Length: 78
Image (cartoon, rainbow, N blue to C red; front, side, top):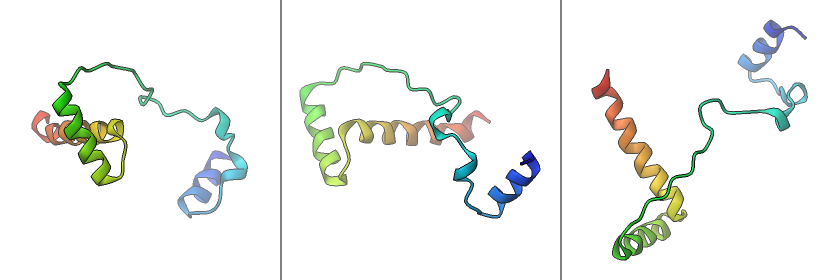
């Protein structure tokens, strides 16, 4: 199959799973990098309460909030 045919199928919303080896898929620029951050215990308790309220993990909540803050900075950088 040509790249053009594959692109057409994708653009048309056709099922392209049979043509992709998902075991080799990567997300360039999204390779996780571990960081450690220390919070006071009262802040962790507040994070945990908010995470439970939203039905997510503490880590997911922190990632959402940091991503939201960084996204808000982008227009200011342009």
